[in-house]
Image (cartoon, rainbow, N blue to C red; front, side, top):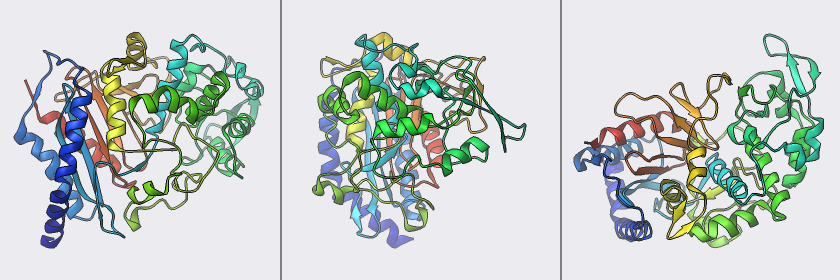
Length: 424
């Protein structure tokens, strides 16, 4: 244990200068964000508990390493790289480490969709079949009470809308977990066969039955992947081309994308512990080095702490960064409020949790006991990355690690420690 702790300290010292450089650039870039006079402030000693927590997790062998950023009033209050990015190579974890962010791709795609809404080229109430005709023929599974068998296929009570895709009420699900008949159909279909593109994927998906009628149940699934195809149809570009031109390049998110075509970047990729890898590959999304045409807007991106921090700061700034507007202020406000309400049921895997609703791309906390606030919005990725943004306290946090089995408890504890470090 002592040797492990010593190694951690050496690695921390090695990246100290780099951390300082990153911190300066982050702060300078976000200096246009004015301080919120009503926000609470961070206590330095309490903040140390966040860093200490991750050091203990690394020393105990639970995770290989992590990079952690907490930013308030446009300036980092904690920026730390801990442990290693890959135990096989012993390479130190650094702020420019590249991570598979999986479902943290969803907020990026959702913002891209809302940019088209702001442009007047797309409406939340639009029928998805307007852009992907195959969805005009989709049916809904009428399942037995236990969910194990499909008794019949029913027509849509109403069309799937763009809003349904954004808030996961489309009836489109995932086949990666759960035991219902529809989930099993997703898991055993040919959805991911061959080197597919977004158009092929969406058309294959439309041949499968929906798990529920649109607008009735929050059901986590491939909805945002379908949005990726909608973006392509509306813009006339590939998903990455549109996001790169309108969002990623202007924000300076140059290490965020769908594959690692640049060989120089491959040595910066974080890897989970050998015993913490997925039992089964997730549609090839766990191998960002392998070229593929499918640009999964719901789970396919890689990114870095610095890149995602710029994205988060833009949202915290209500749609602007460095004097450039990406989203209307009212659009950000709409995205970050609950769009479910009491009329929409939650499935058995309701990931936002009992204290949260869901907006247009984010979980939104709607009730909170101290130390949390009810204005926080957030999301995470199955590989271990997570973030949250809190406008009330004018702050956000981004944590990047690769540890699928440890992510849930670490996210919960990290959010608690961060909020407990805030003082009036």
